[in-house]
Length: 169
Image (cartoon, rainbow, N blue to C red; front, side, top):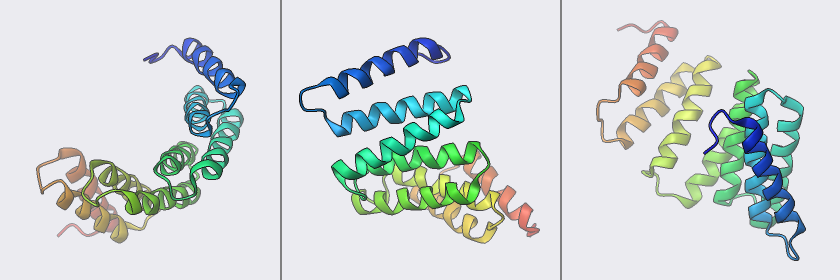
C-alpha cells in the first residue's frame, strides 16, 4: 500500500499497534501481525536492531496465543528467515525456514502454492549454504508441485545449483 513511503507506512503501523494494545482485550494475533509488518518495514529501512526486536516479539506473541505450529506462527517464522537471509545469517535463516515449513506442512495440503513457496525459500537457503543436492531435491519437488510447467525462475535456480555443484551433465 505504501510501497517506498516508509514514513507513512511506519506512522500507520505504529498507530495500529497502539490501537491493538490499547484495546480492552488485545487480540494477540492482530498484535503479532502488526509487529511482523513493522519488523519487515524496519528491516527494509536498515534498522536491524529494531526489526529483530519486533520480529522476536511477534514470534513470542503468536506462539503464546496460537501455539508453535499455527499458520500465523509459520508466517512470522518465514519473515524471520527472510530477515536472517538479508543479513547473510544463513544457518539461522535455514533454522527458521525449516520450522515454518514443518508448521505449514501440518496445516496445508502439500500441493498448496504457499507450501511450494516455502519449499523454494528453503531450497534457496540450502543452495546458498552449499548443500546443492538437498536444494536440488527441493527445487525438483517444487517443479513437480507446479505440474512441471516451464518456470524460468525455478529452472534457472535448478540449473545454477547443478552448475555450482560442478554437475554440468
